[in-house]
Image (cartoon, rainbow, N blue to C red; front, side, top):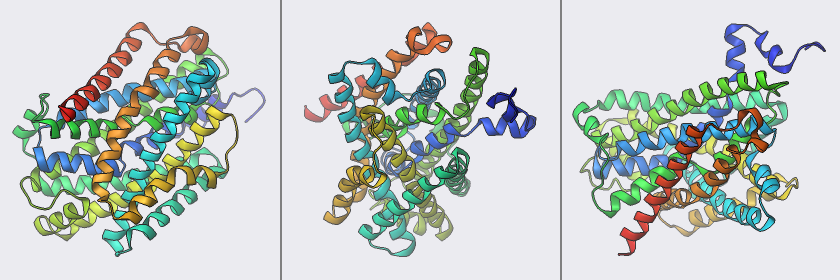
Length: 413
C-alpha cells in the first residue's frame, strides 16, 4: 500500500471479484452463532413435535437477525469501538456494570450449548465420552482463536469453511428427505399449539438471534478496514449489509433445513427428544449417510461456535472492564457450567434447549443499548440510524420481550 492509498482503496485494487470478496467475512463469523448446537436441539425438537408449525419463527427470527447484525456492524464501522466499549463509555457506571454481569451469564449459556454440542458430536462419531469430548471442543476453540495472530482473514476463512460443512450437510439431508410444500406453506402462518410450542419458539428465537454476537459483530468491523472519510464509511456499510444478507440468509436456510428434515422424517417417531435419539432415528429411517451428515455438521457447529463464543466473551469482558483478560481465565469463567453439566449426567439435549431460552431473555439487554446508541448522531455521526431503522429495531425488541413475557405467563399459570 502506498502513502497515497487508503486501506479501502488498497482492497479494491485487488480486482473487482477478489476486492469484493475481501470486504466480506465478519457476518459469516457471526452467522456461526446462528447455526450452533443450540439450533440443532431447538429446531429438531420443533420439527419432530410440531412438524412445520414453527417455520414462521425461523423466518421472523432470521429477518430480525439481519437487522440487528447490520446495526452492530454499523456501530463498529462508525465509531471504531465495539458495543461493549460504547456501553461503558456512554452509560452510567452502574448500568454498564449491570450489562456486563448479564452478558457474562449469556456467555455461560452460550458456552453450554457449544461445548455440549461438540461433545455430543464426538460421542456420536467416535464414541468419546462427553466430558473428554467437551475438553477437546474447548481445545479446538483455542486453536481457532490462535489464527487471529495471523490477521483477521485466516480466522474468517476457517470459520467460513466450517459453516460450509454445516450447510452442505443439511443440503444433502434435505435433498434425501424431501419437502412437503403444503406443510411448509402452512408453517409460514404464525401460530402456536400450547405452552410447549411457545417454549420451543422462544428457544428458537434465542438460538437464532444470539446476544453475544450482537456485541461481537461490532468488534469484527471496528478496525478491520478503517474508513478515511464519510464516503468510504458509507461504502463499507453497503458492503457489510451485503455481507449480512448473504451470511444470515445462509444461516436461515440451514435452520429451516433442520426443521424440515425433522418434520419430514421424525414426526411421531419415538425417542427423538435428544440429539442422540435424532441421530439414531435418522440412521434407522434415512440411512447411515444422513446420520453421518448430521453428526459431522453438529461437530463443525460445536467447534466453530465454541471459537466464536470465546472470542465474543473476550470482547464483552475487555470492552466493559477495559482490561486485557488472559484467554485461559476468560475461557474458565464460562466453560465451568458446561463441564459441570457434562460431568453430572444431566440430559445434554434438555440443557441445550434451556440454554437457548436463557439466551432469548438476554437478547433485549443487548439489543436495547444497541438501538439507543445507533440512533444518536453524536455517537454515530454520518451513519446514524434513519427513523425507520430505529422503529424497526425497536419493534423487534418489543416482539422479543412480549414473547418472553407470554412464555412466563403460560409456564407459571
